Image (tube, rainbow, N blue to C red; front, side, top):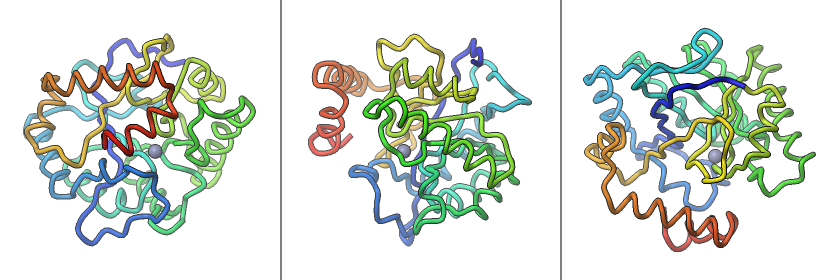
Length: 258
Ligand SMILES: [Zn+2]
């Protein structure tokens, strides 16, 4: 397991979309809440560049992040990551982690092997986001292991790379599934919000939302989150604890729209 003595700020993106972006048909409900407009994404990256933030990736050459650094991550492997996000990242000279749902590679709206190869060649890091995007905490141990191992192997064999990083599908995790990810050979495990009872090392992430103006993005990076949003964060944790993650997921998508 990696030893990450310093917790960097890790930003989590999903879709980067323009008006004419064709989105995959089989997206989870609520996915559009995380679709950042290309023009906004560009403003965010240009601000990081102007402020001289150092953008890190985690790999064999750089196994631990430095102080006060930012890591950029993209979940789900949608085609817009290639045609909207990659040009902006290249222009700013920023590397990033892309977490791919193995089963959806090459499906309409998702990147295929050619795009993944191009990302790798551009200095991006390809990681696994599970084989099928199932919430791991809902599965049997044998199924969790299959999701972790099969997705890693599939990406490694087809791209001829090492896949060292994993991001939890839909963010749900516990000590057991994180332990299993390390046991399957992953060196870095990225999650969303950190559950209270988690005692294993992993990287929490801040989800960049579609609705964020640049001011809110800057607040997320500088750690100056508005008080009412901190309160919402606490309420989310309480709902998860009392009702379980399945109920929380339903409430999030249908009522809270967060
Ligand atoms: Zn996902």
